[in-house]
Image 1 (cartoon, rainbow, N blue to C red):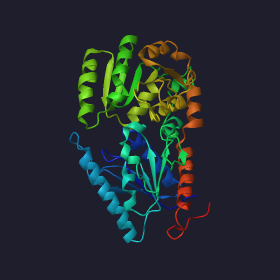
Image 2: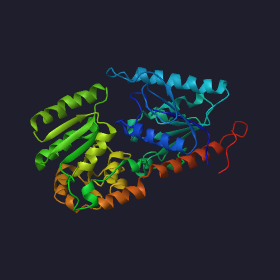
Image 3: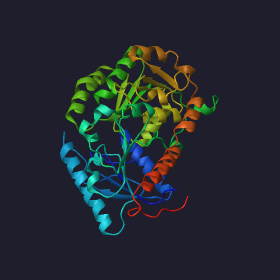
Image 4: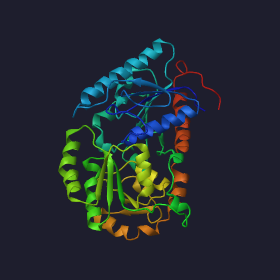
Length: 372
């Protein structure tokens, strides 16, 4: 089993913690926690204020000004490169770099460490040149089979490892465990949870709730990009102002998210892009909440149509599925989550991949590994 030193590199824009809104940040936080529990020495390179299990290396302050990503990304990458080189000079080099930043691997030729880049986004979200002249020290992995199909041309794609969640963090509504239990709270209303940007389609969730005449909670974060903020002001704020049955929660805490999931009659996933994964769908299942999701990307790999929720084609299909939502059995959703979405399974698969990548190193630079 791999038990050496790993540097995790985060997306540079925001902090990493259990409260993170982005799926990549949440997955990194969970994986680093699990790897630390497995005895691996972990360091996370991320924005100041991040909360991790192992060692934290701050690469600078998170973005607060709109459209400051390019400057912040350069700062982030430069500090990471120097940090890796400094660890070599100090005699405690990293055995592997695990990149979740969305592009640090382009600097891999400047460091003498194997690098695994987990691709969290659809192919067209990455600049094409990111995949040209990739150093041999770089390996990629995808988080779903559907996503991997779009990267089939990459020579260094050793694995597809689905994301996982900390199942023990999620609980079902008490009413689901005992139908006669008193003082329990019935599920009610719709929930949309995530980053508030056009491709996630929160405006369609509001449209759906208005047409269905149901209460809805929109809980999420607007990132510091002008086009995200313009989308919120153009599509979300006016609808919230008009709808008496809509509630907005900005940047909900992890506990707030879990509470909302326990209470929701259905969780809506209205993405307009092919999702590569969906932690929201996993968390909903772990909470016993049915999911109504647009049929796109990896969602058919996560949501069992007619069993843990419904896969639909657009708002009309979603509206129809709400009439049948009561047939979804919460206990089946919970068991599905336990069988398929464990962060421990995810970490075990990554640990195996780490070992494989470490063994590929030339013998003269390879560090001795502990026996399995």
